[in-house]
Length: 281
Image 1: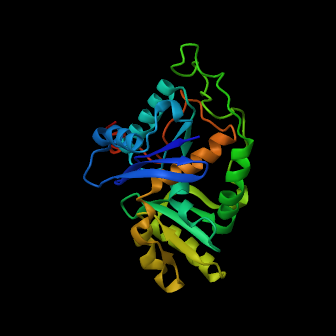
Image 2 (image 1 turned 60 degrees about the vertical axis):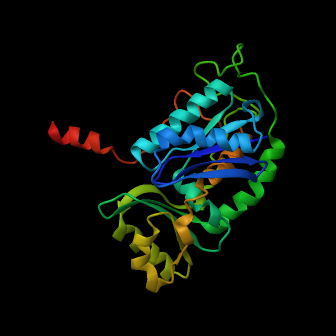
């Protein structure tokens, strides 16, 4: 079983491959690289190094946002195209959840944030211990429960039937949300830095340890330094594609594949072109 993770949500992108909860390999797309030109060559190179053929891929996970408008469109389009061509299920994964994932299990609250410009961040806050329970318990249990099921692949063997998600190596079905409600303290939203910092200061004042991760962390840390907030070196972006793959594997093993034809990015705000067009009307 192997799941590919794709992340083009930010200035750093990447691809990763996970199997049974174990990272097989990952490649980071650098700051100066264009995701549209480099994503597919990077994935092809990684698969060659791992001796991984499309026939051995059981699913694809992709970061669906929040994040760069153009980047998200590229990543989601590639994931859907490969899912259709290879006849495997695709699962969209929250960029913020994948950003927080390396800290799953820490006692306290994890705030994943991405710089949204103009003194705002895209952010979500999670209960670290609840994420840890999920990462430890759901991986083994879900993977053991997963069944091979290929009936959703079209007769030609090239992809899913229109209107449904392919099954690949995973069982399909309507699964409940992966995250328990108590694991999410503040849901995904675009808010001002001051508003997010204020909520985290209140959490710190109540005795909770606050962890900051993502490229918005430095913006928040300046306001939370005295509250004892902890930041993560390099902000946790480099291996985010691997975390997308890990979360995606858990979701797919539960039968939580997305409808391939309905999957779309979660921008949380309009693109610059859309905003200018609206202002001109």
